Amino acid sequence: MRSDYTVAVIGGGASGVALAARIVESLPAGLSTANVSIALFDAHGCRGGNAYAADTPSNLMNTTGSAIDGGYGGDFGFLRWAGENSDKWRPLLGDRTPNPCGYVPRPVFGQYLADLLEDARRRAPDRGMQLDTVAEEVVDIAPPASSEQSYCIRTASGARFEARYIYLAIGHLPRAKTEDYQHREHYYHNPYPISRLIEEIPKEASVGVIGSRLTAIDVALGLAAGGHQGTVTCVSRRGRLPAVRADQGKYQFRKLEREQLRKHLRYRSARLRLADVAAMLGSEIEHAEGRPVALGDIVNAPASPVAYYEHEIRLAEGRARPWQAVLYATNRNIDLLWHHLEEEDKKLLMSEWLNDWLTYRASIPRENAERVLALMRTGRLEVRGGAREIRYDDSTRRFNLCLGGDDTVAVEFLAAATGSANRIENADSTLTRNLLARGLVRSHRFGGVDCRFETGQVTGRNHSGADSRMFALGPITSGVYFFTTALEIVHRQASRRAEDLAFMLGVDWLDLPETEEWVDARQRVSGSRPVKPEVPSEGAPDLLERVVAGDQFDLIDFEQLHLLNDQISSGELRRPDPEKAG
Ligand SMILES: Cc1cc2nc3c(=O)[nH]c(=O)nc-3n(C[C@H](O)[C@H](O)[C@H](O)COP(=O)(O)OP(=O)(O)OC[C@H]3O[C@@H](n4cnc5c(N)ncnc54)[C@H](O)[C@@H]3O)c2cc1C
Image (cartoon, rainbow, N blue to C red; front, side, top):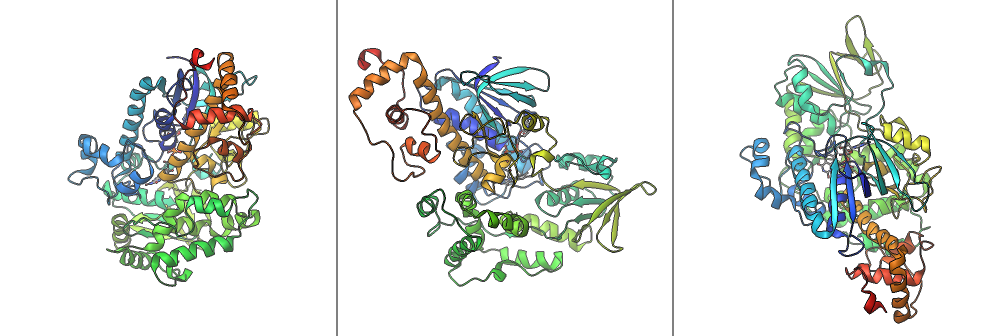
């Protein structure tokens, strides 16, 4: 295996695989892609990442087959793959078949990801590229000494690699342990794989779960499916379960589709207030519902978890909940709304409304909600709010879950279902610790790493956006893009990064002495052109506009850029023919 690459993608979950596949699929064929080599590093060997790794089939996706195909995977569609690979999902699905309206177990999607990657790896040589996977944890990345040089990557085994461009797709980072109880036996800091809990926790044992969202539901349903008979108690501050998903329709915004919104917010300094966003979404919800809707119609009044789920399941049964389709449609614009929000409103949203957003946006399929309700009715599952503190009692060897006053639940086993580290300085990751220490990345005030909104270029103390050839995508960019944990969103990010890479490789190519003469000759022929478009518009064929939007116009001479852009957008960036160029 080689040790120097054009591109290194760190992380082989849904984000990293989408990026590698998009690079292979979408770079223009020809000179810019000749000798482009990609290394995809994953500590666990690109087996579905944290979300879709091999595990119990009770871990269901919350995205239907058709919604996956609408937003992820490009030409290598999930449903088509499922149709051709029944041997891969049959053991997990039995008699059922993946279909446009159904929710498959997440490990099935993990198998699809592995095949998507393999397909890209096989196709790469036809396009003049090489795609390798490296099953290693990356522990450090040293910056290049000059703009000519590459980043130096070090893995846990001590191996060293070089790459000119780095993409951080490191996903959901585990939180570092900070509490005494987290070091005790019978405590699971990471509940995945759930199959390990099923194997190790005695069937009659009492189990506590910190959290009451999607991961907590994975734990409760996984244990029950594995034959666990003891009580499971989920505790969180508010004790709220996620909303229940109705038939997943697709909503077309009247006024908030990405291009419309970009026109509305055409100036980068344009600012939105939270009330504006609420009014815009409220108006779309009323349009979708075909009636006036008050917030109280959607946000249920606090009720017991059993009453809440009875109500939610009734509402989701056999009918659409149009407001849900509107919330899912925000996959297409949520980053823009967030980016243009006033700073004080961002703070307000994070401190007061984030929990509600997650409760209603990240809902669960009805079939899983019915299982949760059945467990609650038999008393095998309890969901409690008011969680304050967790203590380990050495004399009883129990974890005490303190819910305020004298209300304490003692459990023998405890699993954390609190999600990943929001702030990177709290993450248990050698790589991010080293990148922070080197000043190559910095923590974003709202979570993850700081990067430029337009390009994902990572910014650090010693690493300014303009110089950086290090980019980020996926959940690690949550502070910049707000909601990043959806396949459609990570796929869009991957497509944008691949498109930008095509441009940057083109710029690199322009620097080669052998092309300079050819470009100069073409410039003389093409004559002068307008330099700066008035309004940058995303998605337009002209990549120049993207560069202008990203404030990168110092990168290169504009005439050359126009020429290069023409070549890229026509898909004909090829090695120049010296005779014609003359
Ligand atoms: C439990 C769960 C269920 C979800 N279900 C859905 C769903 O049904 N539908 C949906 O649209 N979205 C879902 N999501 C959202 C999900 O986050 C995204 O869809 C997507 O999986 C994010 O992928 P990722 O590759 O960025 O992150 P991850 O899945 O976290 O993968 C990151 C990968 O990077 C690797 N890595 C990290 N650090 C290093 C390092 N230093 N060196 C090498 N490798 C490293 C890790 O080993 C891991 O494999 C779910 C998320 C979770 C956590």
